[in-house]
Image 1 (spheres, rainbow, N blue to C red):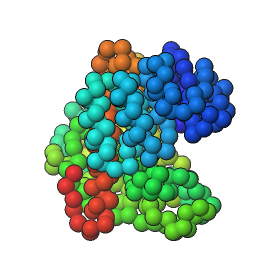
Image 2 (cartoon, helix red, strand yellow; image 1 turned 30 degrees about the vertical axis):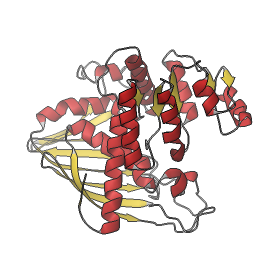
Image 3 (cartoon, rainbow, N blue to C red; image 1 turned 120 degrees about the horizontal axis):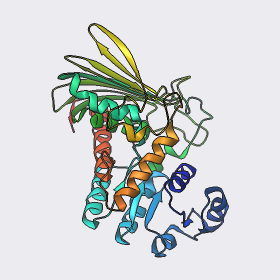
Image 4 (tube, rainbow, N blue to C red; image 1 turned 180 degrees about the vertical axis):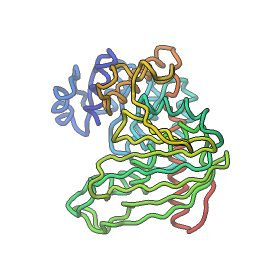
Length: 343
């Protein structure tokens, strides 16, 4: 993720002043790879240097909170990877501290920056009252026992691995597009691969299914998995209303599916025909595919625009990160207690 952030920094016209790692040697190893001016001996040295305007935090999850709080105390703007924290209370604390500090603090919920997601958000006005929100986020990168990662460890990644890592993106996208809020959840979780190379027994979920209801009266369902064979990064969202439906598939981001009783069609990403809200996120002509890097670069560019005093629409802040953490925590509580839980 450091490479992804560094590329987006450069694309936004900023200078990558420095990089810190878990040791001075690791920082120096990363410096040329990321295109940084210098390597700092520690994150504390970087934060306290007075050389930087904004800190990008791309560490394991358990380090997010201490680094964010130090950066906020130093008056820095912050971009922090998701999940914002390993528990909902700490995420809420971080969001509150960012607001008190009066600095820009954002979370890379970058799927918001697909042009067709912005188009879907505009077209919500045409689908009537929302009755159903459904979808999933499926991956297979942790399918085998030899597949292992620090995220599996609840001390490093938090108690909700699949929910926090990819479920958080889906919560955020569903609420962003609909403008509605998930109000209560009923969840189930399962560990499919019980023993991994360095983690046995595995304590964090591989799979989760969630039923939910929204403040606006819609019902919903979600499936998330990091052990779904053949699925690499399939984030899917479908919203049904009383007049029409729409659907977005992150693995086919150039189109938005539109459905009505009389038939259905796909809308192609084309800046000539997109709404004014979607057009800024469609810089390439139709037929020239855009993808994840484009979304990430748009997110960082909007973050820097906010730091410069502008107010980009739809910028995901620490408040949004805390919101996603609260929903994930509610799902874990529901799965553990076997009941519906209010968000």
